[in-house]
Amino acid sequence: MHSSSHDLHRTSARVVVPLLEGVHCRCEVLTNRPARKCNIGGIECLVRVPGPTPWTVSGGGELNPPRDNRGLRDQDWPAARWGQNNSQYTVTIEAVGLHVLGDLPSSDGELIAFEEAVGRWKRLLRDWLAVIAEGPTAFLWPADADNIWGPDQDRRLSYARYRRGDMWEPQVVSWWQWNHAFGHAADTDSAPLSRRLITLGLRAAAEGDGRLAVIHAATAAECALTIGLAHKLSAKHSPEEVQRLMRNHRMLGGRLALALKLGMTVPSDARKSLLDLRNLTLHNGHEIIGDDAWKALAAAKAIVNDFEPLPDHCEEPVSSSVDVDSSDLPGERL
Image (cartoon, rainbow, N blue to C red; front, top):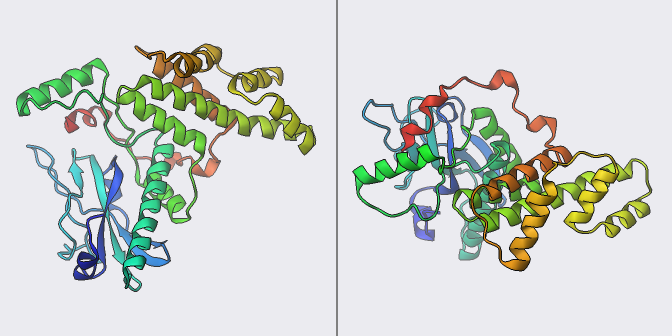
């Protein structure tokens, strides 16, 4: 967070909170709704998104600080980078503002406790946004693509990597998705572990770490199988029998076999792309190259969707979606 104890008092209850990951979203997130109230660490706050920046033909530009209740510029926010205007349709939010409504932390201990509470809130918001957007919410590329050549060559390399399919393109977060994720974070709900692991796997694969991606994918599948199998078995067996069967099929391979025995559907390549590949990675130090990591993630995601589906209330109503010209989204960012 961009604040020391001195800065927090100087800015009169306004705190800049850099997000853990940029959120590629529709402009409606900035323009269509008021601030949201949230209790963070026992302190009432208004969470404000950045102010919009008018789109210009020559490019985007940085987002402005949050506006006040009347929609006017508020000059009291600390200097910070709030995000990027990508196009006339999309922005990337990199920070939000907290307008503290209650008493400010008065001691160093209270200040640290509040900072830690804000950190937990940020993690919950990141996790839920990624779950609802089905993956990381920021553009990602291989970790070895960070060399700096200069503006012209950097742009050329970015487009070349995009054309080759190296870049992770996040889904564009709508206002409904932002608001729903915010609600879960405000209620201190933890996102489902299996889906958090899928997100970690996708991030690792996009950054070029295939081994880590496969490990996360296999662990996500095992978590979801555990939930789904226990639910299935509970319909016909006593709790003691459910525990016995789960103990007898403790590992990923055993739970895949149990799922098939119970007539449940698992991807046909699950053993090859998840179990065998994970074992090669963990026990033999096998390097993951090519599309193997993405195949493992696809199999794991199918298992997670079938065995631990999100509740219906986490699905965005069709009527809330706004059509966006997808051809305008990724290229404008590069």
